[in-house]
Length: 377
Ligand code: AAL
Image 1: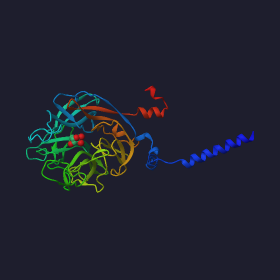
Image 2: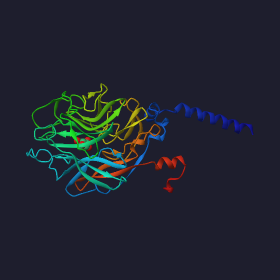
Image 3: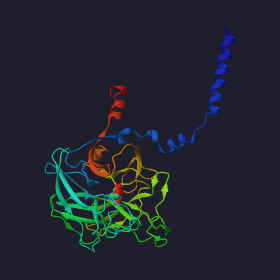
Image 4: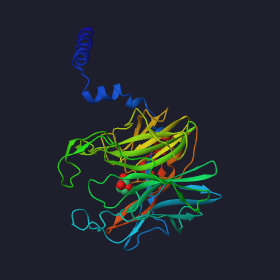
């Protein structure tokens, strides 16, 4: 009886030894270990579900897009957004007056709601400037800050003519009520840097002698926070001579900081503070700032956190994030996702942009937490 047992023990150890000696770590495993992927819990992970709203939905010949964050003022919700009418023709028509994008010839409008689902369009908040002003062609992609009894709208501005190489600016308007009246700041509060050089005279934004900084061409998607006793203006930068990478278009975010709401805004020496991301979505959490990066760049579809509002780390990977969302503004010191619970965003159907609603969805997290089968969903 002894012999077969011995043979069995001996061969078991041999096999085990062989397995141990052949065991190797794949690059993916090494990467996950080094980046601590599996040490992070799901508290930063979420999904989204979408629903239609009334009042700002699809309308023939009208574009409504890029809604701001949703504020609650005296029990009523408010949002601000890009609005324009008519089809666009694109660049290169030879007609400098032709509408080039679904955000060209826009104004900033606003709407209110009691429940977040049925919205009433209230009217125009900010219009285009007079001929010759920095904002005479289009004002669009607004964001809102309520602070210290004031409302600050920040938005993109374009001066005529709108060409591929046109550099846009960021404008600001201030009011004491969500209903206005809005008073514009005379000059842009941020412009692209003057660091790149175009190649040739053709209106080609990809053709450069040198690109310059990450925001040498466009400063887009401004969002303003009162943070650490200063005004933090986050934005998306696009460089002259933009390239296409593994994650899509070359877009990165920057931040410019000021002591006063109207500026002067000084760019952080850390800029760009992301290597990815299209429309900016940020919310404060604890002492820091959370950012949701979507659409472009190698770190698109991630939620990131910066304790200092500047140095961001990936906290989770997400999917199907809403495009250009305006989240309902709320703050928490315990829930990292407090700032993205619900909000508005835009979609495009049959050529027209319109606004819909998203809600954060934690169904998967709950199922795992309760160890339930997915079939119960
Ligand atoms: C959006 C934003 C900015 C761009 C355009 C309108 O997704 O990034 O606002 O200018 O597209």
